[in-house]
Length: 163
Image 1 (cartoon, rainbow, N blue to C red):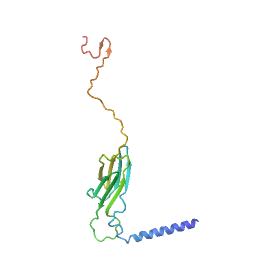
Image 2: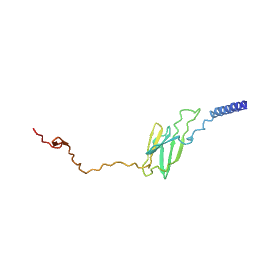
Image 3: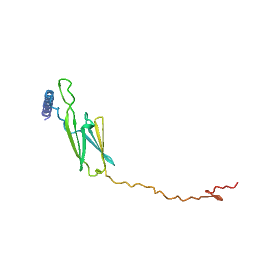
Image 4: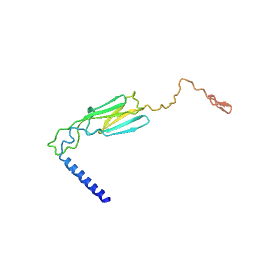
């Protein structure tokens, strides 16, 4: 049984290696397409959801972020650079992309989300409704009562002392 597994494993590795070598001769395989969706991480904080997507080579002018209902769409275009001679191999992908996400139920759609692009990573902050935490509010406009403390024969608020 073990020898059959080893033999099958060897054959699978050989096949994958042959496919990789064949792919080297297909220069057009990635051009014109932004393969898949941008890679995305989602973080949950007490006051917001944070989304971070990798968008190397994409400028802010080539991005669009829209929210309609609970659906957030990140779309854009990665432009192909000018050719620097005859391409021998092209693995980098170019073209349009779009990524749709359904925002969580407690996303605050009344608040404006924030987005920033830095070093090829877009960060999107969507506020959460969350539970409202009570805040203590000082009430102003009231005079504080004077405090009198008895010390010996006089009181602490008397200004004339016996000389």
